[in-house]
Every structure is written in C-alpha cells, then in structure tokens.
Image 1: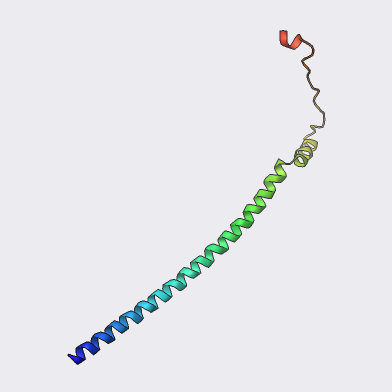
Image 2 (image 1 turned 60 degrees about the horizontal axis):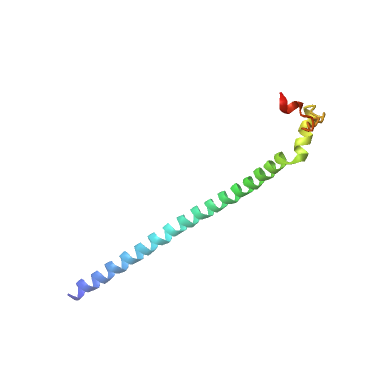
Length: 90
C-alpha cells in the first residue's frame, strides 16, 4: 500500500510538471503571436496615417487649384444672376 501511494504521488507530480511545461510552452507561443500582431497593427496604423494624409491632400483646395492649373481650367465661370427674368420665362 505504501508503494502504491508513493507511485501515485510520483505519477501525479509528473503529470503536473508536464502540464506546467505544456502551459509554459503554449504561453510562449501565444506571446510570440501577440508580438507579431502588435507589429502588424503598428504597420497598419502607419499606413493608415499615410493614407489619411493623402486623402487630406486630395481634398484640399490647394490640390484642386493645382489640378485645375494642370488641366487648363483657369478661366473663372461667370455667375448667373436671376435679376433678369428671361431665365424664368424660358
């Protein structure tokens, strides 16, 4: 009986040690994945900032005026006033 309880204690001890090793290795793998995802998030954040700046540049009036100058849209449109009623009668 003494040998059986000693053997069962050693078996439980080995099972707990192997479970601890498994959990430790698994946690190391998870931490590597977390680091990988964090670096991916940082690169995506940088790309997002670059794209936001490009969008702001495209939406700016400075960009619109430079594109208008490149496409020869420098003539300003004449405003149409409705003081004269000929437009409403047609």
